[in-house]
Amino acid sequence: MPVPEPIKALVGAMATWRQTLHAQPELLYDVERTAAFVAERLREFGCDEVVTGIGRTGVVGVVRGRGGRSNRAIGLRADMDALPIQEVRDLPYRSTVLGKMHACGHDGHMAMLLGAAQYLAKSRDFDGSAVLIFQPAEEGGGGGEAMVEDGLMERFGIEAVYGMHNIPGMPVGTFAVRPGPIMASTDRFTITIEGRGGHAALPQNAVDSVLVASHVIIALQSIVSRNLDPLQSAVVSVCALDAGEAFNVLPQCVTMRGTMRTLSQDVRSAVKERIDALVRDVAAAFGATGTVDFGSSYPVTENHPAETEFMADVAEALVGPERVDRAVAPMMTAEDFSYMLGRRPGAYMFIGNGDSASLHHPLYDFNDEAAPYGAALWAQLIETGLPMGDEGRAVVSNRPAP
Image 1 (cartoon, rainbow, N blue to C red):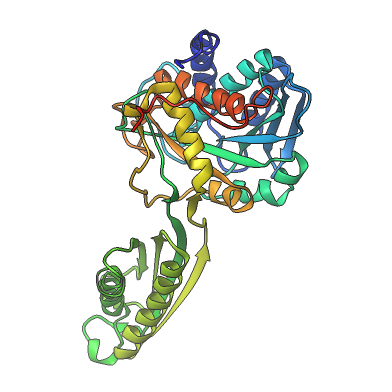
Image 2: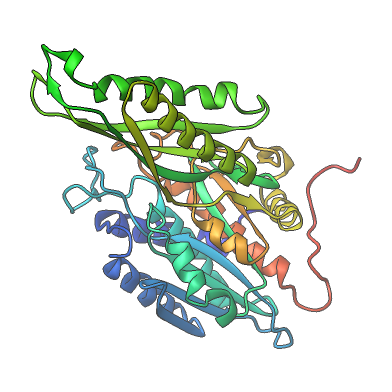
């Protein structure tokens, strides 16, 4: 089951859409121009419904198959927002907005789903509804949660939902997935250390908050190595520190900001408890006070087993079993598709972006050669998952028989 010819015929169009979107990046929920572009394309394709403003600036297109008997619906999701990064490559379609760029490939994710939308709107070779979800604010704004809380699943009768992200270093035309946790939860923290300010030449009259903060940073690194089961995964990183302004003044306060990431709720709770205890007790040992303020972000992105197997089967039918990794290692990055998977069964898959710079890097660019594989996977998820007749959800796999 190679990439269908009608999708191959859309390669040029998908590249044009993607490069147009790349040149006009927008951040978080402020994606009005991007959302308008997406909605206009969906209407041009002949989608049965195009709804805007879900989750503030999200767009949903609905394509109904010609089977006419089923009320089942499957959701396919792409993210729309860019990053506050200055692009450095001199591309013909480089970002026209100072300090903003599509450095995570969301421009490519939109192009792939638009390609699938055009194919499905023309062929309609399925029975049920394809719900095409274009989501704002993945990069820290929780747009997935906003769309879910705005009634996305109920309004469109979605029974299962699927997401996909490009991965630099994975060859083009390959896919990777796993059941269970595939991406980490993430929680922000702000630590405040309050000592007693004073003259740098008279440290005996002060409580040096910078010294205390240094010990706290070192102590935090013991959590993963000494408080967790070695077979569990977590990351604790202090990423910013604000302290004082003068070369000869010991500051009264130090503020630190960072992030913790885990792959299970139990580990997440344990790490939070240890951060709180270490900050409080290490500070107290020096005569200072330490407090932690946690700002929750995204939960663990956890794939559902049956839907993961189904998505992997469809990918294998498209590119062959040797090009689909069914047991990829989880990544400690986070993804707000987790909110959608918390409401409906589904799966999140990685697609190869070839030899490109890493995600969130000013040299990154989505590989347009990957687009037909992503669009074909989306289309075949719908045609296989919502088949004409009584075939059910079976998929013919290229995997050799045991």
